[in-house]
Amino acid sequence: MLRIALTALWNGDRQADRVVPPSGFTAQLTLFAAGTMAFLAVFALALSLASGRLANIWGQELARTATIRVVAPIDQRSAQTEAALRILETTKGVATARALTDEEQQSLLAPWFGPELAIDALPVPRLIEIIEEDDGMDADGLRLRLAAEVPGAVLDNHSRWRAPLVKAASRLKLLGWVSMILIIATLAAMVTLAANAALSANAQVIAVLRLVGATDSYIAQAFIRRFTLRALTGAAAGTGVGLLAILLLPSTADAGGFLTGLGFQGWHWVVPLVIPFLSGGVAFAATGAAARRTLKELA
Image (tube, rainbow, N blue to C red; front, side, top):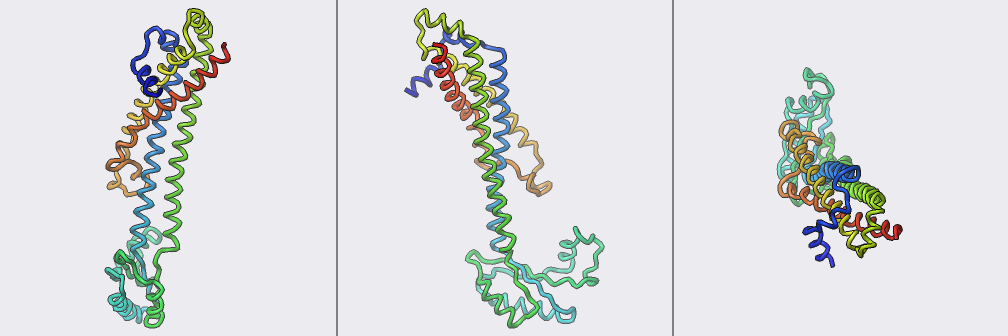
């Protein structure tokens, strides 16, 4: 049944196509709605995929990093920092550990205190950066050793703020897919509205066709074909414009922010090519339902 419908959709019928006006309000509405919804769908899809990548990056990178803050008097800070580094050298699961230099700590504080900040003028703790191995380390055991041997050292494995970041990125991914569903529903509503308008406007022509023996399925097929092709054409144009807009976004290498990473990577560039066919399928189903309902009312 589906194969027959698709064959009829592709081949068409010149006589049946005359039932549907080739231009006018309904044609413009269908093309505009399909193009606009496809354009928005490209960005919703890009947002969802980019958020998924961001969640994975944050989850993987932050899960393997930790920081030790050495809070001690200035005359004891170097000694306690060295003691903490010696403990880390014998801690299982620690790949690398190093103390940040004054220049590195100054660059971290520059956004808040300015580039002229003198580290020695503030009681800034010495920071030790830890990179964990894939299997991770025993954070609780390390805290106990530090508390016993380096009382001024405080371990932070980023768990307090890592989880909210990953959760936020996951929510953005979900929001992107919800937006896709709403876009599809909106397209279906607009195509249904346009099909109903076209059917109502051609009520007299439909009545004449019935008198000469045309069946409702024959008439409905004409509307389904015309509106499906219109939606497919409009969605293809909207998808092309959307992909071009994505390509013109600043690259991640230039700024490194989240919005500059909004785009597609690798095989994800193929995913938006499904949007025109999905739009055509939505128009096919929506027009078919609208045609059957309206033809029944006009009977």
